[in-house]
Image (cartoon, rainbow, N blue to C red; front, side, top):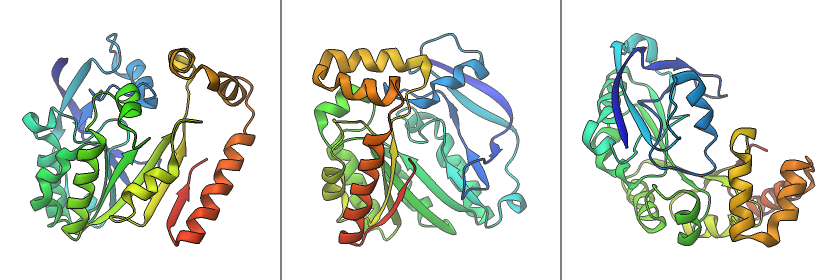
Length: 263
């Protein structure tokens, strides 16, 4: 892993994501090395030639976070990296940022695939408002090792979700990306429902730059799914996703779950 410390003008970015005023990405890059990661496009803006997943820039802000700017603002950690990648244990950029967000009385939403978030329970409890969301594309450990090898194991992630919930904090599950024919979304709900009733679903977004890599993986591991992936991602047929959306909505209604679907 190539580690650099980089100076940035501001750690805050005005959000284009509905529901959030600001986004904070403490790092550039991510060692989780998820094969489906949409954030790989960031390389063209940051000047990195290294393959995505092999580098991590630790951001050092020139301008400190101003509490007045973030007073009761909705802040997302993160949109293009994981705030609790394994190197956070050493560099503690997310922990330092949380300390500022406490003082600013910000409303903070965290999205992670890492059990390391439990380290910061002492700070999370002090936030004016906090939701911790855990991302799952599957609860099958073999699938996790194949598509997101650098993340926390499914078991430790579920344990972390339980710990956050039992500490009295708001929790959510991001079931994403849903991999057609691979992700068992009902299994994700069943594994996590004791610890949350809030779910968000998103589909697999295969950008042209890494479409070939992912389709090659499907050809190797799930050749029977090639026709389905060809229909969705090469021919643009969205009937599968429309059916999937209806199924999730019906199930959520029957189970009294709070659900948002982004496809």
